[in-house]
Image (cartoon, rainbow, N blue to C red):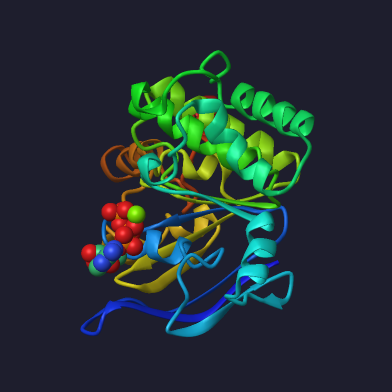
Length: 278
Ligand SMILES: Nc1ncnc2c1ncn2[C@@H]1O[C@H](COP(=O)(O)OP(=O)(O)OP(=O)(O)O)[C@@H](O)[C@H]1O
Ligand SMILES: [Mg+2]
């Protein structure tokens, strides 16, 4: 449903941030984009609803090529909502409720519907009660939640979130991951960039790895975390539970037969299997 075809993008003549990126995300998937600082993740995301126009290549949504006139952009932005990496780039209204209402108001919805959506979106990100607060009085993590609520209130089919858990406290990270899972179960296609490798295997159907403006890997978390050369090129690490089992194998002779747990749930099963054998 969302396809990026051979996108190239330069910020200035001598620096190409995207060097020909192609990827496909199917309806209902939840995918993660991984890559080190400066790899081009944010640059790529800003192409997904036409904030940036590529120098070369195209973006397709439901088979339709993204065009850059005002009318087409408005249509595509109803389908694809982007939560920016830095909430200060997103939030600008004098109060939280006005900010979250901005998108739905632009859709021409009734005041009542807008009010309902603002209430709904703030509740889902755990920010009910902050309606009248000035955004600049919020903490970083609270701003992030409000920015997410602003996109949620648009009820997009595809949500693109650029490092949504950065700056959240540990419980906030867990809560947000759970929220994204729920939204995905409700049918929203979700694309996120993140550095939190421990969480990726819990939710991602597919993982893309970007290095210096080029996609060097695509696959399930199991595929990607089993390829040391990709991990090294992208400054990535395996999830901490995976590292534990790699060490148990290397240092204590437990044979994992190439099947390393990626999540706590998988690790529990593996421990029980190992203990039952011994
Ligand atoms: N506005 C800009 N003008 C010039 N160069 C830019 C601009 N924004 C980003 N770049 C450059 O483009 C490259 C890709 O940046 P981008 O922000 O897309 O990386 P990223 O993968 O999102 O990194 P991070 O993990 O730090 O968020 C970097 O080398 C960066 O310096
Ligand atoms: Mg970025």
